[in-house]
Each structure stands twice: as C-alpha cells, then as structure tokens.
Image (cartoon, rainbow, N blue to C red):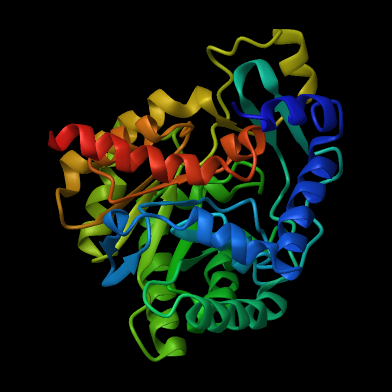
Length: 359
C-alpha cells in the first residue's frame, strides 16, 4: 500500500505548488544531512543489473531525474540517496536571475500534470559551480564503484539579447563543464522570451559548436554534449535537429521539454486558461514525447544517445522508452505526485519487467 498519495492530498494538494516543492526538497536534504539518507540509499540502491553505459560512463540505473527539480545543485547527494541513476541540475544561466513573478508553478491534479513559468530562476553559473564540484567529490566517496552521474543543463539569461546568446551560454559552459559528467544546451523552454528561436538549425549550429569547444577546453577532457528539444517542433524540424546533431557529432539529444499545448486535458478548460502561460509537463506529454523519441531513433540509429523524458510515471513507461530507442530515461512531474520512494519503485519494477521478459 502506497501512503504518499494520501499524504500528498492532505499535506500538499491545497498548498502553493512552489512552496510545497521547497518543503519536500528540504525534507529530502534534511534526511541526507542527518544520516537517514544513507539508510535510504542502501534500501533504494538500484540493482546491479540496471547499470547502463552511455557517453563512456556507467550509470547505476537508466532512470534519472530531469532538470528542473534541483535548479541550483543544492541537493544532488540527497537525491542520489533515493536511487536516481543520474541527476540533471539546472537550468543554470550565465548570470543569476530571480525568474518570473510568482505564482509561477501550478498543478493540474486531474491530469497528473504541472504548468510552470519559472523562468530559469537560479544563482548563476559562478555560484553553482562550487556546489557541483563538491557534490561530485562526495558521490565519488560515497559510491566508490558506480556513482550516480551529474548532468548540467544550461540556458540563456533572460536579459541577454538573442544576438548575444552564444557568449552567455559560454559563460555557463566554461564555469560548469569541469564538474559536469555531461552538459545539456536547453533551447526549448517556453518561459524565456525568444529562446525557442534558437532551435532553428542555422542558429543552433554555431551555438552548439561553440559550447562544445568551450566545455572541452575548460574541463581538459571531452564533456558529452546534448541538446534538449521541445515536443512542439514539427516532425520536419525534429529531423533537421537530428541531422544537425549527427553533423556536429553531438553525444545525444534529450526529448522532450515541456509543451505549450493544452490539448486533451481533463481539467476544466476555464481553470487551465486561468493559469496563464507556461510549459506543461506530466502525463499529457507521454504520447508526443514517445513519438519524437521514435522519430529521432529512426534518424540517428545508434550513433547518438537519446534521453527520453515527458510523461514518465511507471516502470512500464521507462521500459517502453528504452524499447523505443532511448538509452536513458528521466522523470520529474510524477516525482511531485508520487513522493520520495517513487524512483525506488521504478528501479525495482524495471528489474521485474526484465526478469519476466527473459523467461
């Protein structure tokens, strides 16, 4: 019997979503600081059979936490306690910024979805970099054999013009790459004005090339580089990004970010409209994200690592993405609804699914 859904209904469902997130995240971090997290880590450790190779790295599990939950690298070790194979931090920008005005995070409980217009609120690359370095060293101590992987997601500072976007991304790339296991260029959030225009391949090409070169130089090694795309791209644009990624010899693509679409929701349309603009995440993205993944797989084959995200709630969802061509899978929104033991259930469920398939 799962207790957390009842707890969520009583304790969090009525509360401002951003406030509830902060309380929940603080509880996870407190558990780690008090030593309870180490007990949890032993109970939640992914089975060795789930280890996954990507980018020349070994991930303890193919299932990880998408960017957006830990925006500033405050809780990497605590989140690793829960059993995530990787934690993607961010989105981080070259300059610190407060993000958009509150309220800016909203639940659509009937749809098991979230609408956000956070606006890349974060402390900036210079402040986050030392946290990443510290967390990486701590994970190496705590997991001497196969440690959880740290991904870093970077985006454009809001007050930087699009013409100056590359220089802004380079600030983050140079500052964060030395402590990153992999780096993600986010050009697909709907909450920074004009950002999605950077998904145009003519603009994206020089940006990705410059970021990749700067990251490798700063780190003194090759830092795997990925681009994260929106589910709202046309199929033709998805194909164009795939060809560009192959041409630039990127390491992978993350599919997909949040959507600006509100199609097919169960929630009252008036309620949805009242929430205003923002990116929708959660269960409603499941089908389109899977479609984009399959299209990318057809285009790139085994030449790139594909990370699937969007509408992932169960072990079956994760396995479906792996079967469709993903090497790694991420979740986020269901974490808010299912609680801290969700990732452990996913990992255990994956083991059971694989055991059944092998019989």
